[in-house]
Length: 189
Image (cartoon, rainbow, N blue to C red; front, side, top):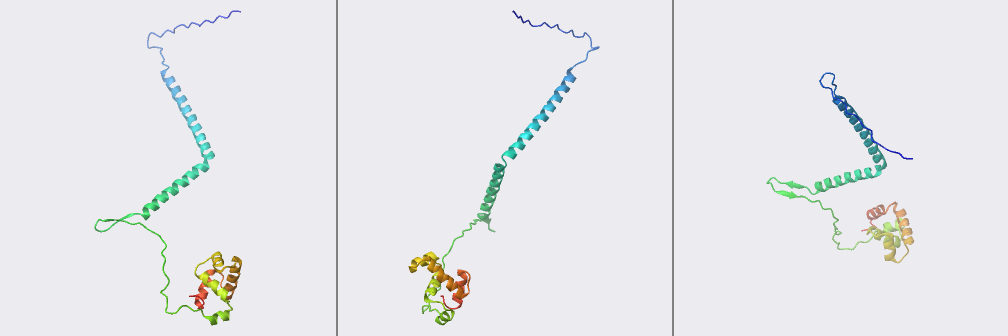
């Protein structure tokens, strides 16, 4: 079987000789191109919008995280500039102001001529033992239970027991209350 393919021949259309009866297809074709272009643009915009919504929904955690990071960075920059801002004096001189926060150790009052002696009458009326008073003194100096136990060569539970008994006798709930009450009663320096 033999198949032969030949290209069909088309005849040229004759152009009309005069202007009469001649209609141009150019305005119709331009309108069609504009309509197809507008519809294609609308479809592309709709696809881009749905893709945008998909990206926002799919990556919302990352987008919100980036937004929070940007806000904190902006706040940090603003705060840094605010803290280390420059000030102008009346003479046009610029003063750079920097805020420095640090802890300053203040020595205790000058030692008195006589060393401190606890009020033993109050100690006996409250029923505070010498060991409880010793532990209360170390608490007032800022030692932790573990440090007190190490210094007195006792267990930490023993220190807790003595603290609890001293707090009960002084009517205190916290360490600071116990120290304040001890100072008011003349038991601590």
